[in-house]
Image (cartoon, rainbow, N blue to C red):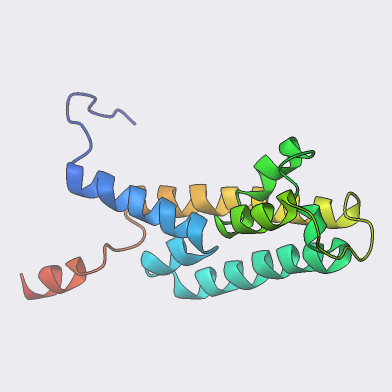
Length: 144
C-alpha cells in the first residue's frame, strides 16, 4: 500500500493523536475510551490498574524507587504520571515497608507500566487508522 509522503498529517488529526496518547498515559484505558472503544477502555483500565495495585500490595509503595531503582522506575512511570507522585514519597523515606519491595511487587508494577505502553500505542494507532471517532465529529457526519 503506497502512502503519499508529500501530504503531512493535518494539524487537527495530529493534535487528536497526541491527546489520545496523553489520555492513555494519564489513565490506563482512557485513550480507547476517547476513540469510542468504551468496553475495551474499561477492561484495560481494570486489568492494568489491578496489576499495578497488586504490585503495590505485595511490596508496599517501596516498589517505586527512582533513586536506587531507576531502570525499574522507567518501566513503572509508563503506567501513569501518578507513579511520579509515589516516587516523591519514597524518595525521602520514612514510610513503612511491608513485604519485600525489590521483589515480586516491583515486577508487577513494571509489567503494568509496559502493558500500558502497549495500550497507548494501540489507542494511538487505532485513532490514526480511523477505527475510533474523534469526539464531536460524529454529529457533523450525521448532519452532512
